[in-house]
Amino acid sequence: MLDSNLTIKKNLQDWLQRPSYKYMVTIECDRYNEMSKEELEQRLRILDFKLNKRFMICKFPKLPLQNRFWSIGFFEKTTDDDIHLHILMFVPDYPVRHSGYSKNTSPFRTQFVAMDIIQTWLSIKSKKPNGKFRKLKLPHIMRIKENMRTSPSRYVSKQIGFDLDNMFFSFDGFDITNTTLFDS
Image (cartoon, rainbow, N blue to C red; front, top):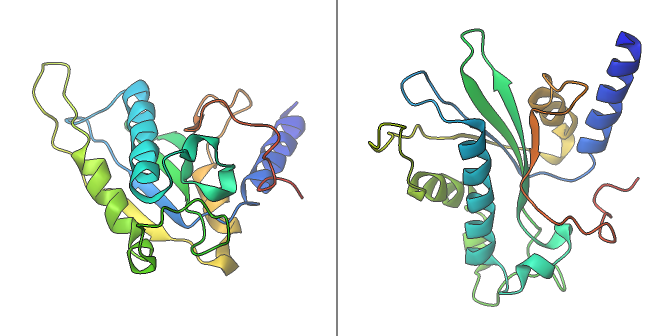
């Protein structure tokens, strides 16, 4: 059974490395500012939505995955049982014919998406259960170079289990006709 689980994990990690992710983002939560898994998932949905709204054409939900911002999150528990989130962030190439980028988006601005990720993450308000606003930590962002695509996908998914409970896709209604990023 263990060998079967390792094979499933390896196949999933092989599948994960197919798209050319631009960033690996780590969101840390400590005991004083712990966020629930549901809040982290919702914040990731909002992050993707706001990035798409800022950079892409107004009909971005209809664009195939290769022409819009999206991310995959992986929850990880520390030895102290704190949860943090690793994110693989896909950013579409610019300029590409029929890319989906808004005509108002400058090529210069697309070079600094990491700053938009930080700004957007911090702009999403977060309250503790007691109703007080949470002080958010800055996300740690690493640019993924083309020649190192394997390492980040292996690292972020290192605690993935057989049930895949700690993995989260931020895009809903995945269109199975637009899977070219994940095809061999």
